[in-house]
Length: 92
Length: 386
Ligand code: SF4
Image (tube, rainbow over all chains, first blue to last red; front, side):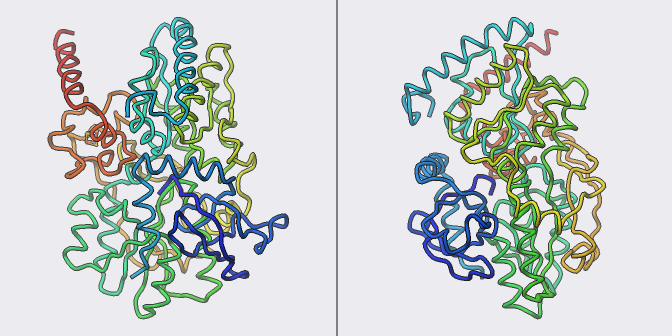
């Protein structure tokens, strides 16, 4: 819950609600990007950005190298799989 | 993993271990005892164990594993409140999977679900909001927990619920804050911690300011750290270097991710939706003033505690539990009387066994059991001969 997982924004789904689709090692889901959008980074400019995702919200922008290192760490901690399963589970 | 060769950059890791070894000798002499550094965050605790950092580290340093795992410090009374809310026939209770096995005084949420309560595991508070839209005839309660890292997400979800005109969604708010609990630890008697490794992701939200404040108030080195083993080693080194030169500052080892002033949109949302609660209970640590938040009046209609009766009674931890002593660094997990006997990750008695971020589960999963049994025996003998 606390570590977050890196993903890449591949599409903006709802500009007003600031919802984007991310790809996390092949798992895709929509997340909220309100916390990383500002005047300097308007919504539509975020496509392609790497972000750190906490419980469905992008909490920080990182670079591709940081993303790769963080993913490797999560795999080592055996957290990556768990997190990705939770991410891909639809609310039911 | 207990060999430096398995680190991402073994050469760098080796040289950091060497530097730490060198500098810690002097600091130990200066202090006249072992150096105690506390890592606050459960994520750090997990990484420290996974990579065997503790075993590889100079014996002049001891790492104390702090209270930064939100699931681990959830008090029993609040779990009972969750159970009571979840058992209502008009409620769908939603929670992160991590919280399902935290012991309540009678049962945990997993048992409650098995008995028929409508409890659903969600990945995000946004998923809970989706459920509320799908089941308008039910009240969907989201069990909001975590430190500042997850607070913006709950706050933004409430704002979204308001914007969407959803009326059957509410929070059972159990968010807790980092700084007050650190201060209460620092205020507690005979706690001897020489420096702190501060949580990188909390800092990503709140910025460097709050840690700067603690560092100057209590004159302790505080290093905000990333989660990779090399980050942690470097942060330990930075804290030691401060101790060696007699400095006590906030330093940011993780500035590549942590913005100095934190995350403005996240902080704004938190400020609108939450206000400090007079006091919050912490498992193992007791009641701490202004150490958690509640929903503001403006958003009262999204507050499960105002929509439904919630007992909010304080229930003492089982007397055999020594979680508090572990959290304060007074004893090591394996010194707890019930460690690995009555308390295991499969059947946790105390909360530190529940999550892989809890110190006891980390010792249990990654520690060498034989070594620990020996250690326990030898300390017991030492106690008897005292
Ligand atoms: S072994 Fe169990 S009861 Fe003892 S401190 Fe750890 S979690 Fe608490």
